[in-house]
Image 1 (spheres, rainbow, N blue to C red):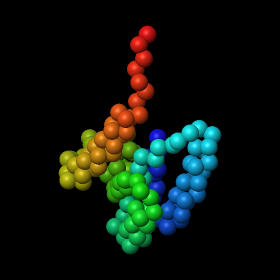
Image 2 (image 1 turned 180 degrees about the vertical axis):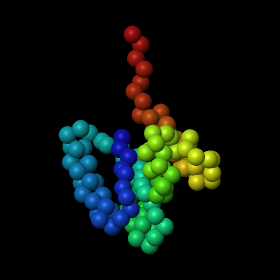
Image 3 (image 1 turned 90 degrees about the vertical axis):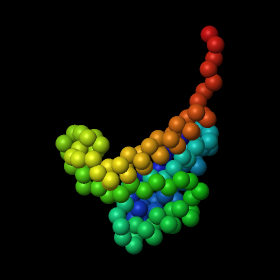
Image 4 (image 1 turned 45 degrees about the horizontal axis):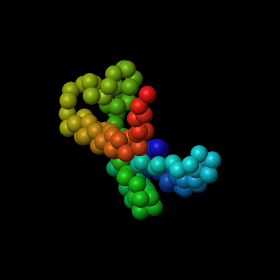
Length: 121
C-alpha cells in the first residue's frame, strides 16, 4: 500500500509520472502495489497550486487530499508538540483534525480489506 505525498508545484506533478513508472516496475518483482491516495502537502492559495492539483486529480483516479501550508504546524514541530496541542484550538486545527481523520478512515478501510486471514494454531 502506497500513499504518495507531493507539494503541488508543476515540477513535482511531472515527477509523479516518473514515480508511477517506478511503481509499475516494482510490481513486476513484488506483485500488485495498492495506490491509496495522493496527499498534496503545504498547499497554498495560488494559481500554480490550484492548477497543479486539478492536473493531478484529472490524471490519477485516486483520492487527493489537500493539506494547507500552516505556520502553526511548523511551529508545533519546532517545539516538539502536536499541532492539536499547540496554541489555542481554532477552526484551522479542527479542519486539520477532520482531514487527518478522513485519511485515517481510508487507511482503516484499506487495511480491513487487506488484512491477512487469521490462522488457527
